[in-house]
Length: 222
Ligand code: G3P
Image 1: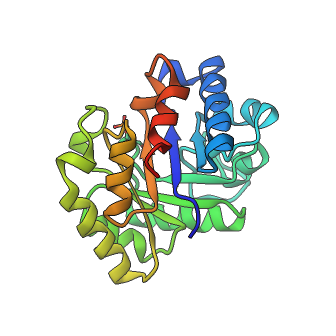
Image 2 (image 1 turned 120 degrees about the vertical axis):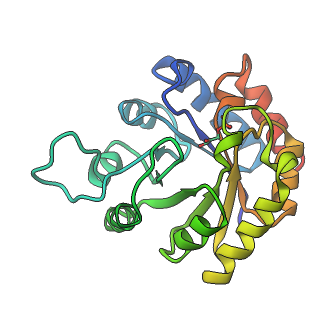
């Protein structure tokens, strides 16, 4: 079985930009190497190139627009993030909502640039819709738990189970991540037991005093 994926979204946190992003990437690379678990980081677009120049861990963009290279102003394109060192991208998020047509266009743009795709969703119905677009992963995150420190694995395990069933009902074998409030190895273990292939998290690592210690705990029960 492929390694579970621990994907750390640095969002627009001050602690997760510039040297803060480098500190977290260094921790993720170190813990990934010692544990054998795939740990990836999704920094701001301005940090992709600096991180890819210094580290070897997988980098994801936080967003791409569904346009090709050319006459577009103020867009983030798949070509740009690929050239900056990303090997994947988040698409859609409760903090960056897209239309269904926009999500489909971003998935198509990512595929043209050979980027892995993680479509973030907020409930079972949107998870099923996302799975129909055949991304590499769908990531179910109940918006009311995001950034609260209250773990979806413990507060709402039912939504994880129902989302895995919804995704795989539409697209057998669809890989599912979950997120919101994840911060410990126990949260990760429960998420995996409920049928996911990993977790998407942010504040538990980004705002930690010692991100490497949190990452070590996250992989400790896999
Ligand atoms: O994309 C990850 C996310 O929205 C979860 O955030 O801070 O609850 O881990 P957090």
